Image (cartoon, rainbow, N blue to C red; front, side, top):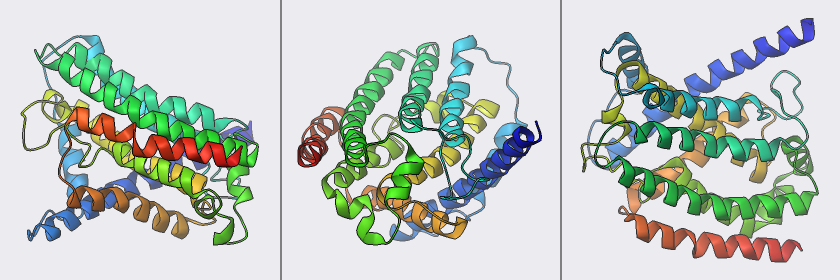
Length: 302
């Protein structure tokens, strides 16, 4: 009983750290983007102000139960990934509730939040909700295919579906990282990650600065706060997942913060350089380059 309580407390502390790091990293990336565009940009602590403001607002507008369960499902997906994702290699406190085969469960959680948002958007009553759902699910499906192929290549290479065992196999130096031992799987996964993070050129589903619809306008007050909370958590845990699978994991918090920052910055950098794709363009792109790389990765391992 004491062990269970201790495990829950350490996990909650880890979630608190991840949430704060996600908020700081999000503000830092927006600041970097502003500087690239020769603007001053927001203060790095702006995400904290936005979060407090959103949670302080209440609404009397109703769109049905499922509309408001959408952000809850979205947050459940991000927190679910965190709960079963080992953060620090070799640490009992920061391994969370990881177990043998946890990689498969985490892949399910990645899609869980997206499906929840699709159900919520369908009840919003907006005439273009169906179009947004179709766009989002079609693009996210093509993102998942090469990512899944990369994961299969890793499972064959390391003969396990345990993230902790995959990280253990990469210890001993950079030469043992999956980035070196299986570059094709790493390339396929990192290209898929661009779409998973939702930055340009793969952000037409939200289409910032172009269309006045989507989660930032359809959802408001506390519900928008829940979405922003999930975004802060999800960006860190997805970066940590790829850190564990392809870049040797982390043996301390400093290493985790540094690696997750660089992985997340990869998507931000690409978003600053390349213009936005249309949905059909992004779908074709994902089923060409990343998909081919994923297939090559499996062929080489077999």
